[in-house]
Image (tube, rainbow over all chains, first blue to last red; front, top):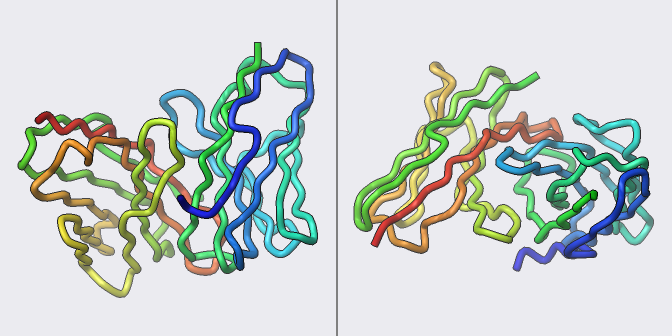
Length: 113
Length: 112
């Protein structure tokens, strides 16, 4: 158990809908990272927050957004969902801003029908 | 940006044999190289990492080597066991940067 929690574990929704994925980092970690893992694909970095502020952006679509709250939990919002958005979404946390070990949560499996 | 290539994509070995997974990277400024193991239905878990100021690091049956000149690093697993079966990912990042660039993964199958 990495100490990073993600909810929900599974999410099934329809095209055009909007969903919110939630992540709680390990105690003491200030950075939260979001990754997308499509079928048979590697991990694609989406976005990072550090202590409430956006720090780095990867291949995140404009339909996706994220935020980190004062209690350091983070939410990833996915809107106008398409079939191709079906994937595993992982959250990771680390103590610093970068170059540190990242601890991954168990992931949220999103299925868009 | 950084480009990390990983091979092979699949690797099948007999229990007790060694397994080697190789990664190359493109950004010479990258200086942190972690390896993650992902079991079915779980998130990736760090198994070993190496920074650019060392050439090799060992942890029991697992070792990682780094060749900065050639810009490649490798994961070595000795005396493989069935529980080593999983997908392994390499990654690269710069110390002060926040992005991890992951390889495409290697599915390791250890046959009993």
